[in-house]
Length: 342
Image (cartoon, rainbow, N blue to C red; front, side, top):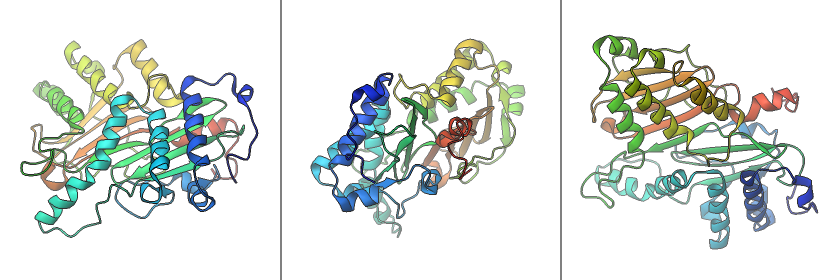
């Protein structure tokens, strides 16, 4: 399957949003720049099981790594990434990739033998045909990044799972970019909120004394999560509700603001109509910077998870999930498009 063999013109896609138009154009330019061998690594059928496999440690992946692209292809690959993300998330993604060059020397100095820390081992994958009428999508993945975009009928139908991590969370003194704190907002805002809780609110919010070793949904294709736990937004005061709203927005604003997929878009509507009354904040571990801590924000299918426990609480994993519609599965189920894979 090659993408550029299609001779479609723009009238096929009159109703596409600016986001889809940019994604489609960026994806086609990227794919068209690839050799036949590179395409064989990059392109998968949309219904291939590979599409719902994702993971965030360094590992051998399917897709085309930056290592195997020339300068022009890298530029086009990064343009595809930028086409789906907000400006701040796009710059964070670049910093997370660059972070490998800090983590490598840090581990060497500490005598830790680990995976090769290589900023060129981030992989681009395209599912389906951006110029066809069937669903299509793209993924960018490597250590501490997993971004998934799914498009159907000229709409972005899913932007989850969306994973960002950072190790070190804060770069220690003595290393390049000391003090850099790529995901610091999602830690600081949460600790500030936790520290405004009074003792009765705390007793509702705290679900475990210690933080888990990792996010609980892990890399599951279908997130299994307990019923909502913790303190409900409706049990918070006005200031706390505002803080919770800001913390949720920290995650939902990672994609560009003209994308409102079925899942996250629905949640944003819920917040604008009803506020955060029915969002639960669950907390584990300490409430001071430098202590192991974990939080989860959960309302129905919408789940945010954040964990900072590894490496003496200087290693963040964070994810946004939409339980029923991760990978666009709910939308596609409605259209019976995944009848032979669900």
